[in-house]
Length: 257
Length: 357
Image (cartoon, rainbow over all chains, first blue to last red):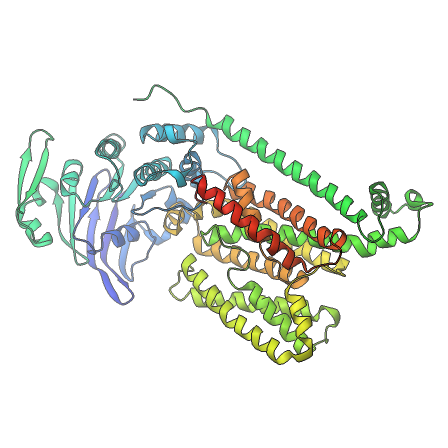
Protein backbone atom coordinates (compact mmCIF):
# COMPACT_ATOMS: atom_id res chain seq x y z
CA UNK A 1 0.00 0.00 0.00
CA UNK A 2 1.19 3.52 -0.73
CA UNK A 3 1.36 6.83 1.09
CA UNK A 4 -0.29 10.12 0.19
CA UNK A 5 0.90 13.28 1.91
CA UNK A 6 -1.14 16.44 1.64
CA UNK A 7 0.42 19.79 2.66
CA UNK A 8 2.07 18.28 5.74
CA UNK A 9 3.65 20.67 8.24
CA UNK A 10 5.70 19.79 11.27
CA UNK A 11 7.39 22.19 13.68
CA UNK A 12 9.77 21.27 16.44
CA UNK A 13 9.99 23.71 19.38
CA UNK A 14 8.58 26.48 17.20
CA UNK A 15 10.94 25.81 14.29
CA UNK A 16 9.41 24.59 11.02
CA UNK A 17 11.11 21.30 10.13
CA UNK A 18 8.67 20.08 7.45
CA UNK A 19 6.82 22.66 5.43
CA UNK A 20 3.92 22.03 3.07
CA UNK A 21 5.02 18.62 1.84
CA UNK A 22 2.63 16.99 -0.64
CA UNK A 23 3.62 13.83 -2.44
CA UNK A 24 2.15 10.47 -3.41
CA UNK A 25 4.32 7.41 -2.87
CA UNK A 26 3.11 4.47 -4.94
CA UNK A 27 3.60 0.98 -3.52
CA UNK A 28 6.17 -1.46 -4.89
CA UNK A 29 8.96 1.02 -5.40
CA UNK A 30 12.34 1.80 -3.91
CA UNK A 31 12.35 5.47 -2.88
CA UNK A 32 15.52 7.29 -1.93
CA UNK A 33 15.39 10.45 0.17
CA UNK A 34 18.45 12.69 -0.08
CA UNK A 35 19.28 16.19 1.06
CA UNK A 36 21.71 18.22 3.13
CA UNK A 37 22.08 17.69 6.90
CA UNK A 38 19.17 19.02 8.92
CA UNK A 39 16.81 19.30 5.95
CA UNK A 40 14.14 17.18 7.66
CA UNK A 41 14.81 13.71 6.21
CA UNK A 42 14.63 11.85 9.51
CA UNK A 43 11.60 13.88 10.64
CA UNK A 44 9.94 12.93 7.37
CA UNK A 45 10.47 9.24 8.17
CA UNK A 46 9.23 9.81 11.74
CA UNK A 47 6.01 11.24 10.28
CA UNK A 48 5.60 8.30 7.89
CA UNK A 49 5.93 5.71 10.65
CA UNK A 50 3.74 7.85 12.95
CA UNK A 51 6.42 8.34 15.59
CA UNK A 52 5.52 12.01 15.17
CA UNK A 53 2.21 13.51 14.05
CA UNK A 54 1.95 16.40 11.59
CA UNK A 55 0.63 19.66 13.04
CA UNK A 56 -1.35 20.30 9.89
CA UNK A 57 -2.05 18.43 6.68
CA UNK A 58 -2.84 14.76 6.22
CA UNK A 59 -0.93 11.55 5.76
CA UNK A 60 -2.87 8.65 4.27
CA UNK A 61 -1.64 5.10 4.04
CA UNK A 62 -3.49 2.59 1.87
CA UNK A 63 -6.27 5.15 1.43
CA UNK A 64 -6.92 5.58 5.17
CA UNK A 65 -5.68 8.20 7.56
CA UNK A 66 -2.46 7.02 9.18
CA UNK A 67 -3.97 7.83 12.58
CA UNK A 68 -6.84 5.40 11.94
CA UNK A 69 -4.54 2.36 12.30
CA UNK A 70 -4.06 0.69 15.65
CA UNK A 71 -0.49 0.44 16.88
CA UNK A 72 -0.39 -3.26 16.23
CA UNK A 73 -1.89 -2.94 12.72
CA UNK A 74 0.71 -0.32 11.87
CA UNK A 75 3.52 -2.48 13.25
CA UNK A 76 2.42 -5.18 10.80
CA UNK A 77 2.56 -2.66 7.92
CA UNK A 78 5.66 -0.54 8.49
CA UNK A 79 9.08 -1.53 9.83
CA UNK A 80 11.82 0.92 10.69
CA UNK A 81 15.60 0.69 10.81
CA UNK A 82 16.64 3.83 12.71
CA UNK A 83 19.80 5.84 12.24
CA UNK A 84 21.11 5.47 15.76
CA UNK A 85 20.64 2.44 17.87
CA UNK A 86 22.00 1.87 21.30
CA UNK A 87 20.99 -0.80 23.77
CA UNK A 88 22.08 -1.02 27.37
CA UNK A 89 21.05 -4.54 28.25
CA UNK A 90 22.76 -7.76 27.16
CA UNK A 91 20.04 -9.31 24.99
CA UNK A 92 21.34 -11.91 22.58
CA UNK A 93 21.25 -11.17 18.88
CA UNK A 94 18.58 -13.83 18.43
CA UNK A 95 16.44 -12.20 21.16
CA UNK A 96 16.66 -8.82 19.42
CA UNK A 97 15.71 -10.24 16.02
CA UNK A 98 12.85 -12.16 17.65
CA UNK A 99 11.54 -8.84 19.00
CA UNK A 100 10.58 -8.11 15.40
CA UNK A 101 7.90 -10.80 15.75
CA UNK A 102 6.24 -8.97 18.66
CA UNK A 103 3.27 -7.72 16.58
CA UNK A 104 2.39 -11.34 15.78
CA UNK A 105 2.93 -13.14 19.10
CA UNK A 106 0.04 -12.98 21.61
CA UNK A 107 0.78 -11.93 25.18
CA UNK A 108 1.99 -14.72 27.49
CA UNK A 109 2.76 -17.08 24.62
CA UNK A 110 6.10 -18.00 23.17
CA UNK A 111 7.17 -17.75 19.55
CA UNK A 112 5.65 -20.34 17.22
CA UNK A 113 7.67 -22.61 14.96
CA UNK A 114 6.86 -20.20 12.11
CA UNK A 115 8.27 -17.27 14.10
CA UNK A 116 11.43 -19.26 14.78
CA UNK A 117 11.75 -20.13 11.06
CA UNK A 118 11.32 -16.51 9.98
CA UNK A 119 13.90 -15.34 12.50
CA UNK A 120 16.37 -18.00 11.36
CA UNK A 121 15.82 -17.05 7.72
CA UNK A 122 16.26 -13.29 8.16
CA UNK A 123 19.31 -13.79 10.35
CA UNK A 124 20.89 -15.78 7.57
CA UNK A 125 19.98 -13.24 4.91
CA UNK A 126 21.41 -10.33 6.94
CA UNK A 127 24.49 -12.43 7.73
CA UNK A 128 24.01 -12.29 11.49
CA UNK A 129 23.32 -16.00 12.03
CA UNK A 130 26.94 -16.43 13.13
CA UNK A 131 26.28 -13.85 15.87
CA UNK A 132 23.03 -15.48 17.07
CA UNK A 133 24.17 -16.25 20.62
CA UNK A 134 26.33 -13.14 21.08
CA UNK A 135 25.27 -10.23 23.30
CA UNK A 136 24.10 -7.19 21.36
CA UNK A 137 26.08 -5.02 23.80
CA UNK A 138 29.34 -6.63 22.66
CA UNK A 139 28.93 -6.03 18.94
CA UNK A 140 30.52 -3.35 16.78
CA UNK A 141 28.38 -0.55 15.33
CA UNK A 142 28.14 -2.22 11.92
CA UNK A 143 27.24 -5.61 13.37
CA UNK A 144 24.55 -3.97 15.50
CA UNK A 145 23.14 -2.24 12.46
CA UNK A 146 22.87 -5.58 10.65
CA UNK A 147 21.04 -7.05 13.65
CA UNK A 148 18.57 -4.17 13.66
CA UNK A 149 18.09 -4.61 9.92
CA UNK A 150 17.35 -8.31 10.47
CA UNK A 151 14.88 -7.35 13.22
CA UNK A 152 13.04 -5.08 10.77
CA UNK A 153 12.94 -7.89 8.18
CA UNK A 154 11.54 -10.25 10.82
CA UNK A 155 8.66 -7.80 11.23
CA UNK A 156 7.63 -8.96 7.73
CA UNK A 157 5.90 -5.75 6.62
CA UNK A 158 4.95 -4.43 3.17
CA UNK A 159 6.79 -1.16 3.93
CA UNK A 160 10.40 -0.90 5.05
CA UNK A 161 11.82 2.44 6.20
CA UNK A 162 15.61 2.76 6.32
CA UNK A 163 17.21 5.79 7.97
CA UNK A 164 20.81 5.67 6.78
CA UNK A 165 20.61 1.99 7.57
CA UNK A 166 23.90 1.20 5.88
CA UNK A 167 25.93 4.13 7.28
CA UNK A 168 28.12 1.92 9.50
CA UNK A 169 28.34 -1.09 7.22
CA UNK A 170 31.36 -2.25 5.26
CA UNK A 171 30.81 -2.16 1.50
CA UNK A 172 30.17 -5.88 1.19
CA UNK A 173 27.39 -5.84 3.78
CA UNK A 174 25.99 -2.57 2.45
CA UNK A 175 25.64 -4.13 -1.01
CA UNK A 176 24.19 -7.30 0.50
CA UNK A 177 21.50 -5.54 2.55
CA UNK A 178 20.53 -2.96 -0.07
CA UNK A 179 20.37 -5.76 -2.66
CA UNK A 180 18.09 -7.65 -0.28
CA UNK A 181 15.80 -4.62 0.01
CA UNK A 182 15.83 -4.13 -3.78
CA UNK A 183 14.89 -7.78 -4.35
CA UNK A 184 11.98 -7.44 -1.92
CA UNK A 185 10.77 -4.46 -3.95
CA UNK A 186 11.09 -6.37 -7.22
CA UNK A 187 9.82 -9.80 -6.17
CA UNK A 188 7.37 -9.05 -3.36
CA UNK A 189 6.17 -5.52 -4.33
CA UNK A 190 7.56 -4.26 -1.05
CA UNK A 191 7.79 -0.47 -0.65
CA UNK A 192 11.15 0.76 0.59
CA UNK A 193 11.80 4.33 1.73
CA UNK A 194 15.45 4.98 2.46
CA UNK A 195 17.42 8.02 3.51
CA UNK A 196 20.90 8.09 1.98
CA UNK A 197 23.96 10.28 2.44
CA UNK A 198 25.74 8.68 -0.50
CA UNK A 199 23.96 9.77 -3.67
CA UNK A 200 25.69 7.12 -5.75
CA UNK A 201 24.34 4.43 -3.46
CA UNK A 202 20.87 5.97 -3.78
CA UNK A 203 21.21 6.12 -7.56
CA UNK A 204 22.26 2.48 -7.75
CA UNK A 205 19.23 1.11 -5.88
CA UNK A 206 16.35 3.59 -6.06
CA UNK A 207 13.71 3.84 -8.80
CA UNK A 208 12.67 7.20 -7.52
CA UNK A 209 14.55 9.98 -5.74
CA UNK A 210 13.15 12.66 -3.42
CA UNK A 211 15.42 15.66 -2.91
CA UNK A 212 14.70 17.61 0.27
CA UNK A 213 15.97 21.04 1.23
CA UNK A 214 14.95 23.14 4.23
CA UNK A 215 11.94 21.03 5.07
CA UNK A 216 10.50 21.07 1.57
CA UNK A 217 10.64 18.73 -1.38
CA UNK A 218 12.99 20.42 -3.82
CA UNK A 219 12.60 17.85 -6.59
CA UNK A 220 11.36 14.31 -6.99
CA UNK A 221 10.78 11.80 -9.71
CA UNK A 222 12.30 8.95 -11.65
CA UNK A 223 15.97 8.65 -10.74
CA UNK A 224 17.10 8.90 -14.37
CA UNK A 225 15.20 12.15 -14.85
CA UNK A 226 15.64 13.92 -11.54
CA UNK A 227 19.27 13.13 -10.83
CA UNK A 228 21.12 15.81 -12.80
CA UNK A 229 23.70 18.55 -12.20
CA UNK A 230 21.01 21.24 -11.90
CA UNK A 231 19.18 19.46 -9.05
CA UNK A 232 22.44 18.79 -7.22
CA UNK A 233 23.44 22.42 -7.62
CA UNK A 234 20.14 23.73 -6.21
CA UNK A 235 19.88 21.24 -3.36
CA UNK A 236 23.50 20.73 -2.27
CA UNK A 237 25.21 23.78 -3.82
CA UNK A 238 27.91 21.63 -5.40
CA UNK A 239 29.16 21.30 -8.95
CA UNK A 240 28.76 17.76 -10.17
CA UNK A 241 28.80 15.66 -13.27
CA UNK A 242 26.21 12.91 -13.71
CA UNK A 243 26.83 10.06 -16.16
CA UNK A 244 25.67 6.54 -16.79
CA UNK A 245 28.18 4.05 -15.48
CA UNK A 246 28.17 0.78 -17.43
CA UNK A 247 29.92 -1.29 -14.77
CA UNK A 248 27.25 -0.66 -12.10
CA UNK A 249 24.56 -0.07 -14.75
CA UNK A 250 23.33 3.02 -12.92
CA UNK A 251 23.76 6.76 -12.86
CA UNK A 252 26.94 7.94 -11.22
CA UNK A 253 27.85 11.30 -9.73
CA UNK A 254 31.30 12.82 -9.43
CA UNK A 255 31.94 16.15 -7.78
CA UNK A 256 34.20 19.08 -8.52
CA UNK A 257 36.68 19.59 -5.72
CA UNK B 1 25.96 -18.49 1.09
CA UNK B 2 26.56 -20.17 4.44
CA UNK B 3 26.64 -23.92 4.62
CA UNK B 4 25.86 -24.10 8.33
CA UNK B 5 22.29 -23.63 9.50
CA UNK B 6 21.71 -21.86 12.81
CA UNK B 7 20.80 -24.36 15.52
CA UNK B 8 17.06 -24.55 16.02
CA UNK B 9 16.11 -21.75 18.33
CA UNK B 10 13.23 -23.71 19.83
CA UNK B 11 15.60 -26.10 21.61
CA UNK B 12 17.63 -23.19 22.81
CA UNK B 13 14.57 -21.40 24.19
CA UNK B 14 13.48 -24.56 25.96
CA UNK B 15 16.88 -24.92 27.58
CA UNK B 16 16.69 -21.34 28.82
CA UNK B 17 13.19 -21.82 30.14
CA UNK B 18 14.25 -24.92 32.02
CA UNK B 19 17.26 -23.10 33.45
CA UNK B 20 15.00 -20.29 34.67
CA UNK B 21 12.55 -22.76 36.17
CA UNK B 22 15.46 -24.40 37.99
CA UNK B 23 16.64 -21.02 39.29
CA UNK B 24 13.15 -20.13 40.46
CA UNK B 25 12.75 -23.50 42.19
CA UNK B 26 16.16 -23.22 43.83
CA UNK B 27 15.46 -19.70 45.08
CA UNK B 28 12.01 -20.72 46.36
CA UNK B 29 13.48 -23.65 48.30
CA UNK B 30 16.23 -21.39 49.64
CA UNK B 31 13.66 -18.80 50.72
CA UNK B 32 11.46 -21.36 52.50
CA UNK B 33 14.48 -22.87 54.25
CA UNK B 34 15.71 -19.45 55.30
CA UNK B 35 12.25 -18.50 56.57
CA UNK B 36 12.19 -21.54 58.85
CA UNK B 37 15.82 -21.26 60.00
CA UNK B 38 15.68 -17.54 60.72
CA UNK B 39 12.40 -17.94 62.61
CA UNK B 40 14.22 -20.37 64.87
CA UNK B 41 17.07 -17.94 65.47
CA UNK B 42 16.99 -15.25 68.14
CA UNK B 43 17.04 -14.68 71.89
CA UNK B 44 15.16 -17.93 72.42
CA UNK B 45 16.49 -20.53 69.94
CA UNK B 46 13.74 -22.73 68.55
CA UNK B 47 14.50 -25.93 66.61
CA UNK B 48 13.45 -25.90 62.96
CA UNK B 49 11.12 -28.87 63.50
CA UNK B 50 9.21 -26.94 66.17
CA UNK B 51 8.96 -23.91 63.89
CA UNK B 52 7.45 -26.05 61.13
CA UNK B 53 5.05 -27.70 63.62
CA UNK B 54 3.89 -24.32 64.96
CA UNK B 55 3.30 -22.91 61.48
CA UNK B 56 1.49 -26.07 60.33
CA UNK B 57 -0.72 -26.14 63.39
CA UNK B 58 -1.69 -22.50 62.79
CA UNK B 59 -2.37 -23.17 59.13
CA UNK B 60 -4.46 -26.25 59.75
CA UNK B 61 -6.02 -24.89 62.94
CA UNK B 62 -5.34 -28.08 64.89
CA UNK B 63 -3.54 -27.69 68.22
CA UNK B 64 -2.35 -31.35 68.30
CA UNK B 65 1.00 -30.68 66.61
CA UNK B 66 2.14 -28.27 69.30
CA UNK B 67 0.83 -30.28 72.26
CA UNK B 68 3.42 -30.49 75.03
CA UNK B 69 5.50 -27.65 73.63
CA UNK B 70 6.49 -24.67 75.80
CA UNK B 71 3.52 -22.38 75.25
CA UNK B 72 5.70 -19.29 74.88
CA UNK B 73 7.15 -20.64 71.63
CA UNK B 74 4.02 -20.34 69.43
CA UNK B 75 3.62 -16.74 70.60
CA UNK B 76 7.25 -15.94 69.82
CA UNK B 77 6.98 -17.50 66.36
CA UNK B 78 3.55 -16.26 65.34
CA UNK B 79 3.38 -12.82 66.94
CA UNK B 80 6.98 -11.68 67.22
CA UNK B 81 9.21 -13.26 64.63
CA UNK B 82 7.11 -14.28 61.62
CA UNK B 83 5.56 -10.84 60.95
CA UNK B 84 9.01 -9.26 60.94
CA UNK B 85 10.57 -12.04 58.87
CA UNK B 86 7.82 -12.05 56.27
CA UNK B 87 7.89 -8.25 56.04
CA UNK B 88 11.66 -8.30 55.51
CA UNK B 89 11.36 -10.94 52.77
CA UNK B 90 8.48 -9.11 51.07
CA UNK B 91 10.20 -5.73 51.14
CA UNK B 92 13.42 -7.27 49.80
CA UNK B 93 11.52 -8.91 46.95
CA UNK B 94 9.53 -5.75 46.28
CA UNK B 95 12.59 -3.51 46.12
CA UNK B 96 14.48 -5.93 43.86
CA UNK B 97 11.58 -6.32 41.44
CA UNK B 98 11.02 -2.54 41.34
CA UNK B 99 14.72 -2.14 40.64
CA UNK B 100 14.35 -4.30 37.52
CA UNK B 101 11.42 -2.21 36.31
CA UNK B 102 13.10 1.15 37.00
CA UNK B 103 16.26 0.01 35.21
CA UNK B 104 14.14 -1.11 32.27
CA UNK B 105 12.10 2.09 31.96
CA UNK B 106 15.04 4.42 32.50
CA UNK B 107 17.19 2.35 30.10
CA UNK B 108 19.84 2.52 32.75
CA UNK B 109 21.28 -0.51 34.55
CA UNK B 110 22.36 1.75 37.42
CA UNK B 111 18.87 2.97 38.27
CA UNK B 112 17.17 1.74 41.44
CA UNK B 113 13.74 2.19 43.06
CA UNK B 114 14.96 5.46 44.57
CA UNK B 115 16.31 7.09 41.39
CA UNK B 116 13.17 9.15 40.89
CA UNK B 117 13.20 10.52 44.43
CA UNK B 118 10.68 8.10 45.94
CA UNK B 119 12.92 7.61 48.98
CA UNK B 120 13.49 11.33 49.49
CA UNK B 121 9.75 11.97 49.27
CA UNK B 122 9.00 9.20 51.75
CA UNK B 123 11.73 10.41 54.09
CA UNK B 124 10.39 13.96 53.98
CA UNK B 125 6.85 12.78 54.72
CA UNK B 126 8.03 10.60 57.59
CA UNK B 127 10.25 13.33 59.05
CA UNK B 128 7.35 15.76 58.91
CA UNK B 129 5.04 13.33 60.70
CA UNK B 130 7.62 12.65 63.40
CA UNK B 131 8.45 16.33 63.86
CA UNK B 132 4.87 17.48 64.10
CA UNK B 133 4.19 14.50 66.31
CA UNK B 134 1.20 13.58 64.19
CA UNK B 135 -0.57 10.68 65.81
CA UNK B 136 -4.04 11.18 64.43
CA UNK B 137 -3.87 7.76 62.79
CA UNK B 138 -2.10 5.96 65.59
CA UNK B 139 1.10 4.06 64.92
CA UNK B 140 0.43 4.08 61.17
CA UNK B 141 0.81 7.88 60.90
CA UNK B 142 4.49 7.83 59.96
CA UNK B 143 4.18 5.16 57.26
CA UNK B 144 1.11 6.93 55.89
CA UNK B 145 2.92 10.26 55.65
CA UNK B 146 5.91 8.51 54.10
CA UNK B 147 3.64 7.01 51.46
CA UNK B 148 1.95 10.33 50.72
CA UNK B 149 5.37 11.99 50.43
CA UNK B 150 6.55 9.34 47.97
CA UNK B 151 3.38 9.51 45.88
CA UNK B 152 3.48 13.32 45.67
CA UNK B 153 7.15 13.18 44.68
CA UNK B 154 6.36 10.77 41.86
CA UNK B 155 3.55 13.02 40.65
CA UNK B 156 5.91 16.01 40.67
CA UNK B 157 8.61 14.11 38.77
CA UNK B 158 6.16 12.91 36.12
CA UNK B 159 4.71 16.43 35.80
CA UNK B 160 8.19 17.94 35.41
CA UNK B 161 9.39 15.45 32.82
CA UNK B 162 6.30 15.32 30.63
CA UNK B 163 6.36 18.94 29.43
CA UNK B 164 7.33 17.96 25.88
CA UNK B 165 4.99 14.98 25.97
CA UNK B 166 8.07 12.80 26.14
CA UNK B 167 8.58 11.11 29.52
CA UNK B 168 12.01 10.26 28.14
CA UNK B 169 14.41 8.47 30.43
CA UNK B 170 16.76 11.46 30.52
CA UNK B 171 13.96 13.83 31.51
CA UNK B 172 12.80 11.44 34.22
CA UNK B 173 16.25 10.97 35.73
CA UNK B 174 16.95 14.71 35.70
CA UNK B 175 13.57 15.56 37.25
CA UNK B 176 14.12 12.87 39.87
CA UNK B 177 17.51 14.30 40.81
CA UNK B 178 16.16 17.86 41.04
CA UNK B 179 13.15 16.91 43.17
CA UNK B 180 15.27 14.66 45.40
CA UNK B 181 17.79 17.47 45.93
CA UNK B 182 15.07 19.88 47.01
CA UNK B 183 13.57 17.29 49.34
CA UNK B 184 16.98 16.48 50.86
CA UNK B 185 17.39 20.13 51.74
CA UNK B 186 13.90 20.01 53.24
CA UNK B 187 14.82 16.95 55.31
CA UNK B 188 17.98 18.69 56.54
CA UNK B 189 15.86 21.63 57.57
CA UNK B 190 13.39 19.40 59.41
CA UNK B 191 16.26 17.69 61.24
CA UNK B 192 17.70 21.09 62.15
CA UNK B 193 14.47 22.28 63.73
CA UNK B 194 13.60 18.85 65.16
CA UNK B 195 15.57 19.22 68.36
CA UNK B 196 14.82 16.13 70.46
CA UNK B 197 13.03 14.14 67.76
CA UNK B 198 16.06 14.26 65.47
CA UNK B 199 17.16 10.85 66.77
CA UNK B 200 13.77 9.36 65.91
CA UNK B 201 13.93 10.81 62.41
CA UNK B 202 17.46 9.57 61.80
CA UNK B 203 16.60 6.11 63.11
CA UNK B 204 13.56 5.90 60.86
CA UNK B 205 15.57 6.99 57.82
CA UNK B 206 18.09 4.20 58.37
CA UNK B 207 15.42 1.57 58.07
CA UNK B 208 14.31 -1.18 60.42
CA UNK B 209 12.08 -4.22 60.57
CA UNK B 210 11.90 -4.21 64.37
CA UNK B 211 8.38 -4.70 65.79
CA UNK B 212 6.69 -5.20 62.41
CA UNK B 213 3.15 -6.52 62.62
CA UNK B 214 0.96 -8.76 60.50
CA UNK B 215 -0.66 -5.55 59.21
CA UNK B 216 2.71 -4.45 57.80
CA UNK B 217 3.27 -7.83 56.19
CA UNK B 218 -0.25 -7.79 54.74
CA UNK B 219 0.20 -4.30 53.31
CA UNK B 220 3.52 -5.25 51.72
CA UNK B 221 2.03 -8.46 50.32
CA UNK B 222 -0.90 -6.61 48.75
CA UNK B 223 1.31 -3.98 47.12
CA UNK B 224 3.87 -6.48 45.88
CA UNK B 225 1.24 -8.92 44.60
CA UNK B 226 -0.48 -6.15 42.66
CA UNK B 227 2.84 -4.80 41.40
CA UNK B 228 4.01 -8.22 40.27
CA UNK B 229 0.83 -8.76 38.25
CA UNK B 230 1.27 -5.41 36.45
CA UNK B 231 4.99 -6.01 35.86
CA UNK B 232 4.49 -9.48 34.40
CA UNK B 233 1.67 -8.20 32.20
CA UNK B 234 3.97 -5.56 30.66
CA UNK B 235 7.27 -7.49 30.87
CA UNK B 236 7.35 -8.09 27.12
CA UNK B 237 6.79 -4.41 26.35
CA UNK B 238 9.53 -3.55 28.84
CA UNK B 239 11.90 -5.77 26.84
CA UNK B 240 11.05 -3.91 23.64
CA UNK B 241 11.44 -0.52 25.31
CA UNK B 242 15.11 -1.29 25.81
CA UNK B 243 15.46 -0.87 22.02
CA UNK B 244 14.61 2.80 22.56
CA UNK B 245 11.25 4.58 22.32
CA UNK B 246 11.29 4.98 18.53
CA UNK B 247 11.85 1.31 17.77
CA UNK B 248 9.49 0.14 20.50
CA UNK B 249 6.80 2.38 18.99
CA UNK B 250 7.48 1.05 15.49
CA UNK B 251 6.90 -2.45 16.86
CA UNK B 252 3.48 -1.40 18.12
CA UNK B 253 4.22 -0.65 21.79
CA UNK B 254 2.27 2.23 23.34
CA UNK B 255 5.46 3.53 24.94
CA UNK B 256 3.86 6.41 26.80
CA UNK B 257 1.16 4.31 28.41
CA UNK B 258 3.53 1.46 29.30
CA UNK B 259 6.02 3.94 30.81
CA UNK B 260 3.35 5.67 32.83
CA UNK B 261 1.71 2.48 34.14
CA UNK B 262 4.98 0.77 35.03
CA UNK B 263 6.40 3.92 36.59
CA UNK B 264 3.32 4.46 38.74
CA UNK B 265 3.11 0.80 39.79
CA UNK B 266 6.84 0.51 40.58
CA UNK B 267 6.88 3.78 42.49
CA UNK B 268 3.83 2.80 44.54
CA UNK B 269 5.37 -0.56 45.42
CA UNK B 270 8.64 1.18 46.35
CA UNK B 271 6.70 3.75 48.37
CA UNK B 272 4.91 1.01 50.33
CA UNK B 273 8.26 -0.74 50.95
CA UNK B 274 9.83 2.48 52.21
CA UNK B 275 6.86 3.43 54.35
CA UNK B 276 6.86 -0.01 55.98
CA UNK B 277 10.58 -0.30 56.62
CA UNK B 278 12.40 3.01 56.07
CA UNK B 279 15.08 3.52 53.45
CA UNK B 280 16.94 0.36 52.56
CA UNK B 281 19.46 0.89 49.82
CA UNK B 282 21.33 -1.34 47.38
CA UNK B 283 18.84 -4.24 47.32
CA UNK B 284 17.02 -2.65 44.37
CA UNK B 285 20.27 -1.97 42.57
CA UNK B 286 22.38 -4.99 43.36
CA UNK B 287 19.87 -7.83 42.99
CA UNK B 288 18.65 -6.97 39.46
CA UNK B 289 22.25 -6.41 38.44
CA UNK B 290 23.48 -9.81 39.61
CA UNK B 291 20.38 -11.67 38.45
CA UNK B 292 20.65 -10.14 34.99
CA UNK B 293 24.10 -11.71 34.71
CA UNK B 294 22.68 -15.11 35.68
CA UNK B 295 19.26 -15.12 34.00
CA UNK B 296 19.72 -12.70 31.11
CA UNK B 297 17.93 -9.41 30.54
CA UNK B 298 14.53 -10.83 29.52
CA UNK B 299 12.17 -9.16 32.03
CA UNK B 300 9.68 -12.02 31.86
CA UNK B 301 12.27 -14.13 33.69
CA UNK B 302 14.26 -11.41 35.43
CA UNK B 303 11.33 -9.99 37.39
CA UNK B 304 10.27 -13.20 39.22
CA UNK B 305 13.87 -14.33 39.74
CA UNK B 306 14.84 -10.94 41.22
CA UNK B 307 11.76 -10.98 43.43
CA UNK B 308 12.83 -14.24 45.08
CA UNK B 309 16.51 -13.33 45.22
CA UNK B 310 15.73 -9.95 46.83
CA UNK B 311 13.56 -11.68 49.42
CA UNK B 312 16.34 -14.13 50.27
CA UNK B 313 18.95 -11.38 50.46
CA UNK B 314 17.08 -8.93 52.67
CA UNK B 315 15.80 -11.68 54.95
CA UNK B 316 19.37 -12.93 55.39
CA UNK B 317 20.57 -9.38 56.13
CA UNK B 318 17.77 -8.78 58.62
CA UNK B 319 18.43 -12.10 60.34
CA UNK B 320 22.10 -11.16 60.56
CA UNK B 321 21.37 -7.90 62.34
CA UNK B 322 18.54 -9.35 64.47
CA UNK B 323 19.94 -12.66 65.64
CA UNK B 324 23.64 -12.92 64.82
CA UNK B 325 25.25 -9.56 65.52
CA UNK B 326 25.71 -8.69 69.22
CA UNK B 327 23.65 -5.50 68.84
CA UNK B 328 21.07 -4.74 66.20
CA UNK B 329 22.31 -2.21 63.66
CA UNK B 330 19.87 -0.49 61.30
CA UNK B 331 19.17 -2.67 58.27
CA UNK B 332 19.64 0.21 55.82
CA UNK B 333 23.15 0.76 57.15
CA UNK B 334 23.94 -2.95 56.97
CA UNK B 335 22.77 -3.34 53.34
CA UNK B 336 24.78 -0.29 52.32
CA UNK B 337 27.88 -1.46 54.19
CA UNK B 338 27.78 -4.93 52.65
CA UNK B 339 26.09 -4.08 49.36
CA UNK B 340 28.23 -1.06 48.49
CA UNK B 341 31.63 -2.75 48.45
CA UNK B 342 30.13 -5.87 46.89
CA UNK B 343 28.65 -3.75 44.13
CA UNK B 344 32.07 -2.16 43.53
CA UNK B 345 33.53 -5.66 43.20
CA UNK B 346 30.84 -6.84 40.78
CA UNK B 347 31.05 -3.64 38.75
CA UNK B 348 34.82 -3.90 38.47
CA UNK B 349 34.70 -7.57 37.48
CA UNK B 350 32.12 -6.95 34.80
CA UNK B 351 34.25 -4.21 33.30
CA UNK B 352 37.19 -6.58 33.32
CA UNK B 353 35.08 -9.16 31.50
CA UNK B 354 34.31 -6.45 28.91
CA UNK B 355 30.61 -6.79 29.34
CA UNK B 356 28.59 -3.64 29.62
CA UNK B 357 25.29 -3.99 31.42
